[in-house]
Structures are given as structure tokens and as C-alpha cells.
Image 1: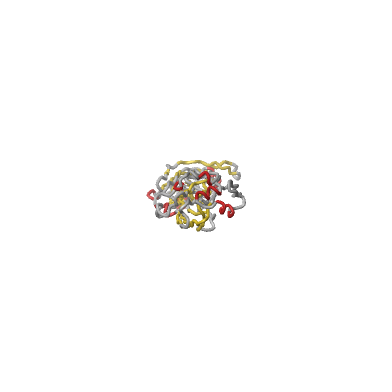
Image 2: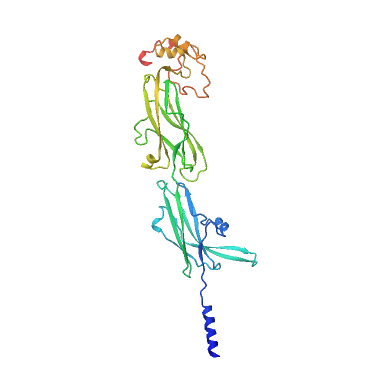
Length: 352
């Protein structure tokens, strides 16, 4: 009977010495701890899309099925592949207390976490990064996970506000072009504009007297440093001066995102070009200017000009039509308030 007793003792010893293996897993969206994970700002996503200047602050979390132990360690796998400026903090441990109504007791669940902090800078837009971690426990059970950071880049476009790019206007007549650049990627990057072509801003620049200026911006929620704009509004205005009749002017403007650096401005920018023909025998009166004054300026017969002028004019005064609160020239010239040809009688012809 002794041999049977020894055999039974050996079997019991073998069974008692079996190690209890634990599973290690990362916490992410879809796990049963999602609500707790979101509250603790752990990694509930595997992909992040952020703009330049936007803070990404997240805790990567791993846990074991041995809920009463904090024996999980976490290691960064791709140190060389981290984006410039990304910080990975040392691991720390947090306990989650969950009420188990089946057992009628509180269950303690330990998590190992590492904080990832990254704020992309100008020049990193359009780049994607992969950050990987490995979690293991004392039983050398390990698993790994990776998440991706996409720094979204702007896409420069114009809202379609112009029916064409060719115009015919008269001397002193307004050319008013409302240009609305925006970020077509939907991330709200702000836009700027400059005259000239994208390849060389010194070429195809604006004609003399033309002006390109910002008149407003429609804002949206700001997340980073260079965003927060739904679209911007620029006004290109030009009043051709005397001596430009029968000439055709070709000029360009271009839009760019405000985050671009160097060649990226040219690469991502958007260009618009216009052709303007200045018609002969057509002239627009400025605010306060009279038909007699304009006729004297051009050494013309004011009576002839009066009979072909619109019916709201008189030889001595001009009542402007309803132009939708946009006068012909919001900035009258220095001598545009003369009342008639007599006021020019003592002015040399060369000074007209």
C-alpha cells in the first residue's frame, strides 16, 4: 500500500505547483472598461487626427486578469520613430474600484499607464506617426499595441464667388472682386493672400492703384494655433486711371495657409489670375463729382456728356443711384469735388 500513497502524494504536488498564468491586454475602445477609460483619458482610440498646435494628451493603459495585482510593466517599442516634440512619461499605476453585485463586493482592478503628450509644430502637417508599446507581467506574458497620430494638412481653395476672370471697365470705374479662400480639408486652417503668382510673387502683380486687403474672417471652433477660420474674405479693388484706355491688364493673386513654411506655401497655395480691359469713352464719376467737372478734365463738351448721362444727373450735381451701399469710389480724389468747368479755368491743363 505504500507505493500507492507515494504516487498520490506526487500527483497532488504536481497539480499544486502549476503556475497561474494571467492575460495582459491594452485598454482601448470596445473593452468593458471603456467608460472608466474615457474618464481617465486612457487610449480609447487607435487613430488621432489633430491640427498644428493642438494638444494631444492621452494615457496608454494596460491591465491583467489578476485584478488584485499591479504587476504589468509597459515598454515603448519605437523610440526612434517618435515625432519631434513628443513626450513619453514614466509608467504609473491606478486602481479602479468596481462594484460586483453578483458577489456583493467591490472588485479592485489595477491598470498600468503611460502618458503621451504631443503638440505638433509648423512643418509637421501632413505627416503621420506610429507609436507602439509592449505590456508584460511577471509571468512573461506580453502583448503589444500601436496607435497612429495624423497631423492633418490644409487644402487651400476658393469659394466660387466669381462668374468669370475677364472684365471690361471704364476709367475710374470700380473693379471690386470679393475673394473667399478657405481650408477645403474641413479642419479650419486660416488663410492669407498676396498679389502675384505662386511661383514668383514679383510677376503678374497688381496694376498701379490696385489694392488687395482683408476685410473679414468667419470664425469657427479653434483647436490649435493656426486654425479657427471657416473662411476669410479679401477685397481686390481697382479704379483705372486716365491714360489706361484700350489697355489690357493681366494680374494674379494667390492664397496660402498661414501654417506653411517655405516651399510648402507654393506647393499648397491656390492662384487666381484676371484679365481686365479698360474701355475707351467710358468714365465713372466719383462722389461729389459733376458732369461739367469731368468734361473739363477731358476737355470735352459737357452738354454732349449731359445728354448721354443717366437721368439722375444734372450738369451741376450728381445724385448717385442705389448701388447697394457701395459707391463708385469710397475714397474721392483730391479735386473731385469741383462744381463745374469754371473751377478748372485757373488750373493748368498738365495738372488735370
